[in-house]
Image (tube, rainbow, N blue to C red; front, side, top):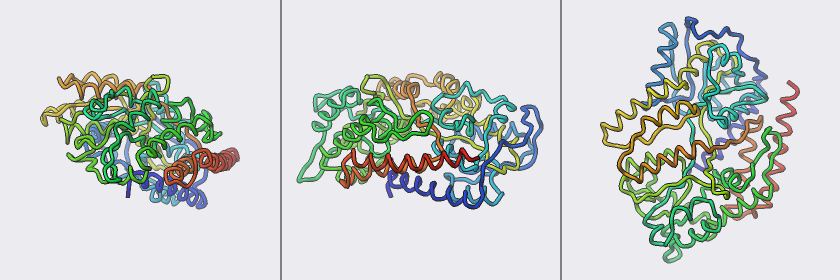
Length: 460
């Protein structure tokens, strides 16, 4: 099953399981009735759900958090990605974990259904410095005027391209960074190669459906209003963005051909599309730079930020956050845990450990992106020039993208809203509808879900 299909199914699953949990009486959730004090001695247990933390970045911070909690708190983990059904069932039964690690785009829905609690008193009592967090990350976990999550990692996109293929076609990375859609369209046609009716080289991959928000923003449009109440999916600029991004696939024989060829690649191995010269360029999350540097350090790469039509860097931020479930039996420990896991000092210690490990392996440390802007500044000081202009450029562009992010605001119908626009894009990709018709339908579906969810919230 592809990552795209998994994402779509996850959105549907979230909306269904949330509805079921609400029916069981999850209800609204007030702030935890706890006295938060950074100097208080804590005790009891702390079950953490949804956080693996098996790498150095996770393990170092986990050790810091356990130290801050003290020996009186026993920490246990439910590892693996958050199982939404398991989590919501636990909340509904009154036996939730003490703290949960969730995607930031789930926070609004969890909050509106009363599955997690507002963290205002936690933030104030433990002295969590919210001014350190990036505004798009904090906005994504702020619902109805209250913060419901403490931002963790940050994920952004940069333009990643095969320099040799660009050069052979008489192109540069500026032709595929998104600043001119006409140039991207022309470059795609030059880079794409077919033989016997089969695609042999993907010219440009616009990464639909996931990156529709990115292309829309590049065209000056947002999928939803800033207050999270009005869907804007059939805005003419969003329609134009979908027409452009889908046109990239149509010019290569259609999305199904591109997808089949893409899925056949050794994406995480030495036979990846860039190393084997079968992909010209694509916007991609920054973590893929580490993959490429690990498995194909000599691949002929070139990087840039993704750029809007105004030529300025742009990135659609996503990531994770810590939240305290309704009924958490140790909210004090949960709050301190979230604080220490995301504070500047913890991120820096974790990054220092990764630097040591990378040096031992003879590999490049490409930095670390978090929702904590102050931490990012300190960690960047640990990034030293490698002497390889390719990978040094990747780091530079990654940090530039991280300073130019946007996000979709939290709303009580996060899952339904995401499903509406992703399903619309998939209908277009599959040839079932034209962009305007698909987005008109999605607009109705999304607005209906938003209206119902906000009306339910307003009753509380």
